[in-house]
Length: 239
Ligand code: SF4
Image (cartoon, rainbow, N blue to C red):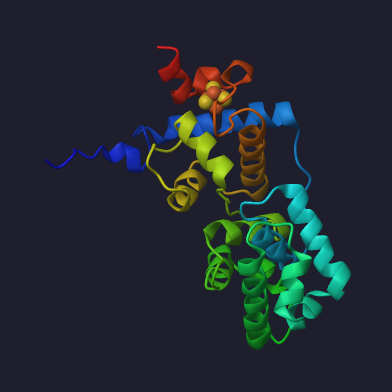
């Protein structure tokens, strides 16, 4: 027998988009009040790209240490690009999968140099969002999350990154359906937000922090949460 597919699971859990938009704004407002607004990053797009490529499944402190090690040891991104891969791997040994990340970062750097003549990605900040996203998204290992992180954090272009925390918290709150993948959540969640980099950044940071501190993967701390009255998951556990 073929299981009946609930289409709401694969998109928005309610057809009323206005309600979801209001909910996304209110979630951002409450969590930003709780955790405070985040300052913009000072990293240029190339530096941010390296940071995000290092950060996959790795804690923030370890990512920051590995990023710093690269510049300390090789002096510049050009130095990282031209270094023996085994040396780069050693410099980032504290992140997860250095043996994958080292050759991948160098391959992307070489491809960028071939196309652009150098490792300066500042030109992306001057492009229309869709064009900048399409340019970055072509590289092996650069998906929608990495692309959005670079363009939002460094260029302040309005593109929402959906990481594991944003994905999990959005799903529990009922901003997206239960079976929406993180990749598909980018467009669905962004459509609920104003087309404004600061508003998108605040939403991303608010859900990220909440996912790290309260709405954690195992056993969310609902007793300490300021969103219980708007949370679909909470409603299912207090029935
Ligand atoms: S009520 Fe619980 S599940 Fe809902 S957002 Fe808060 S911590 Fe997460």
